[in-house]
Length: 332
Image 1: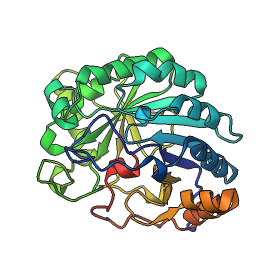
Image 2: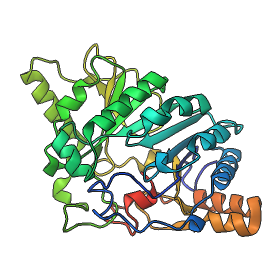
Image 3: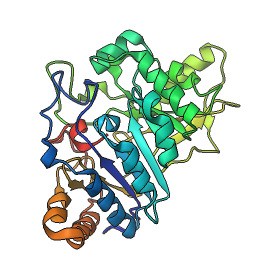
Image 4: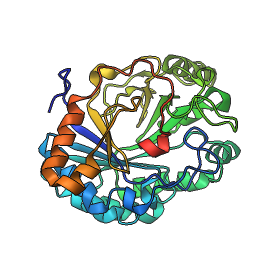
């Protein structure tokens, strides 16, 4: 299926819950957000039904997100049912990794192909500060569990925030001796534009991908390492990252630039929130209610809303600053 601007839309991101076991500073307030009632979020079978409708419309790739998707019960069975849908070629999961030691093997056996693990710092104290409650080792254990389960590729995502003073080279060096794919994401203006408790987006905290790469190269050379070079072999995935690598490294270093270098012309996705809203663009507050359509009008009504969402995708994000929903409510 193509949108109004000729882009092929074959990727659906599904937020299965707004709940999370972390309270990351760029994602939600310290006391969290008011959780949706069980009746107001998609049921497991409804998620599978919408995934099947999406597949019939040409979607091949499904990503399950949250909140933290693994805090929702029934994820293994949901993955198994989605994997059985004709036309679905790839199922991935975005997670903070904490629950992967418990679920990674079962998810792999159910049909999950790969994971993206969110990890913004390798400093234990900063990790607790960013997540407000997490322990770094729990995330590192999640990475190991993903490798042990055979999920491939294993990607680690870090949101680059200037005031955190993250060690980008330390992250990048993780890719040298194992097939781990590190991706740095520019800090995006999603949710409120500022926050009194250290949360919320601010332009001064944005580090461009070009600056990040320069920082990594300068520090690498200072340590006697070669600079990054363009990666010829890219990891499997349908994201907008531009990949580099250290010569001879097993993994890659990717950069995602939603702020400094929009990739709207290449966008191939739509989003489904946990409360059943089709979101045509991460930075747009325009939403279409597919859950109500499904519950009141059945699959044909839901398919009409899905097709309407594809047709309503904007040409570009128009440098929007701030959204009504926070990232945890939209789906990471």
